[in-house]
Image (cartoon, rainbow, N blue to C red; front, side, top):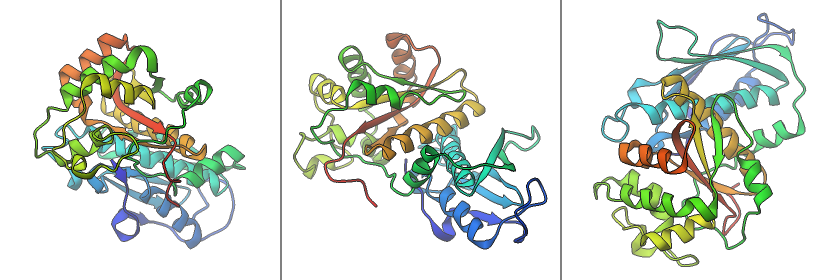
Length: 316
């Protein structure tokens, strides 16, 4: 996943005209408010740098649709990554509404006859954004996928636990660097045997393909091999890794996983961290089932978030 494109390609349409600030369904958006919502949704992380959602900004809220035209049968055959991306866009939409002074109310998959309708968000009540919500909203525009080795500065245990504190039907589970880096390295090494021409897959894994403090050089090429398992485990232990789990493995769970993923990611960025997400290794049944069994996971692993301090500051 990468930062979603902005501008006309963001697939956001607006319905309604500027009106008053009254609460409830009678309100709608000014042009400036619509621009805030449009930009926030367009900044969500997306699959293969595409925009796999369509947002319709309506009076008092918005509808978020799965954009079937972004289907990639080879890289995302089941559409799981696409729906995860939609969940991330939903988080950005809700934060933008809070920043505008409204309390979002969200219904996931509200119409059984419209599987492409991922979520319906309304904003019936005014809401004064908290300082934390403002910080997370601001982080939307600083978040990007950081796929390089992190700085040497370690993340303390308290900071690691804060990263896993978000839970909304999905769960962020912090990985124990001492006990769980080695088994994760084994499974990632197995996943690293993906087809040599799968550029997107290799891009996810390339941060561990070169020594710390050195440029990627040729090792950044998409067919670069991961280091040996012991070296990879050592590098994993130096990062903060959060595994996002869900109770089941349905479309709703994938949407929740993306929703929580973006919440955790924005919270990390707001605290000066950088990160990226891995989804493709968990598409392999042996990796997914093996990791769940080895780590005793109470749920379905959907994605892995990696965080650390950037070598240079996050992009502004």
